Amino acid sequence: MALDLPHGGHLSHGYQTDTKKISDVSIFFETMPYRLDESTGYIFGLLGGLIDVCDKQKAIMLADMAHISGLVAAGVIPSPFEYANVVTTTTHKSLCGPCGAMIFFRKGVKGTNKQGQKVLYDYEDKINQAVFPGLQGGPHNHTITALAVALKHAMTPEYKAYQEQVLSNCSKFADGIDGSRVEKVMEAVHIAANKNTVPGDVSAMVPGGIRELRLSHHTEYLEVKLRERIRWACKHSYQDVTFL
Ligand SMILES: Cc1ncc(COP(=O)(O)O)c(C=O)c1O
Image (cartoon, rainbow, N blue to C red):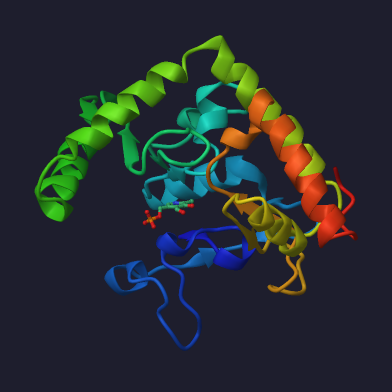
């Protein structure tokens, strides 16, 4: 089960429609979407409910924090590690690393069985084998090296300040503007972003969300430069965009 794409989920979590399997993940697995409470934007019955369901069904809770891992690493938003057995992230989004991914899994004692014996988590071998040799044929050493540099950077006070800036900029974005016009303006100033549906949207063409890839323009220096460029773009072609 994964969050439905039109409610902010991701294609790679097995998106399919009634008539077509869109992501191949929905061919490999029987995928089921869940949706959000449209009035609050939260998961129905709160996170606690989801944890209980996973426990009862003996399901593994996996949090894909791809979009927010930089914010998690900087400690400026709550972390999924407390709840999820497995956490995944791409490394080229808010984390600011190279194009790649990381998988974290729980190790050690999971609980005790009826005989009082310790039961251990058994994710390590399964995940490691699935990556290599299951899906990959060799290590990408250049990516691993660049990721190590990014993770070292993520431990600095400068990185934390930068992620705080990201949050503050996001609250401006959330302030009643639509993803479609923002996408156009960002494109005009050479920043790749794409509009994205969020719960409650009535049109996929004019949705309420925007997905950003590189967040380097949130740093103080680039943000000043960007504001100048966006003002320029608004003045010349997008005069109805007044959010900055
Ligand atoms: C939430 C989420 N998960 C996973 C991915 C990874 O997707 P891919 O399989 O294309 O690398 C992305 C990339 O956009 C994402 O946004």
